[in-house]
Image 1 (cartoon, rainbow, N blue to C red):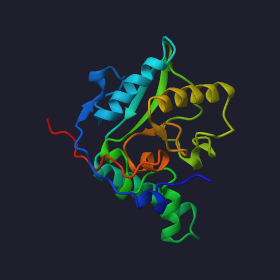
Image 2: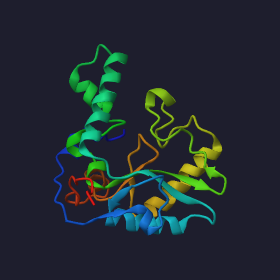
Image 3: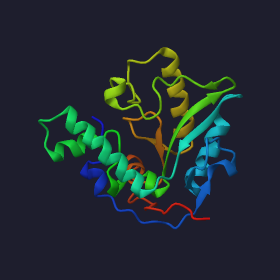
Image 4: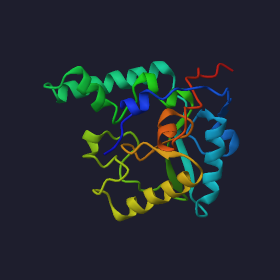
Length: 207
């Protein structure tokens, strides 16, 4: 059974920030559509993962560091959508259900610069990974889950390639979102049996 970010096994993990700086990913050769930042340790591992890919294929990071206010907006918005779809659920149940797709503020890896949302691109553009990035479980009939079976053989092959290079470089996947990979956050600490997370919340760079 998937351990969600709302699970106390994740929320009780302490974050002891190691002071590592943010890196603008484009400056280290990672393809992005605009400004995207991550912690140095995440950036280093993405660079390594890129070298593991076949010739002509690259990582494409859509989002890294996310402002706290935007994270709150995403979580509250998705929670409101779920309330409309599930009127019989109480707030605690909505909180858990929402955490399949958007991290609760208190443990969100994006606000620490610890997570990236990414895909693979080739000479002709994005590869088939089964769903668009940010397709909700409701929109995709669960195909957004990394291990989903209702995707094409090509998409499965591409997801496996993505996982091979990223796990080899030291990142971990949040299983409900094939595109979400992290290092140094609470989910990484839980998955890798580390004593604590090494990244806490970071402000968006001002210069």
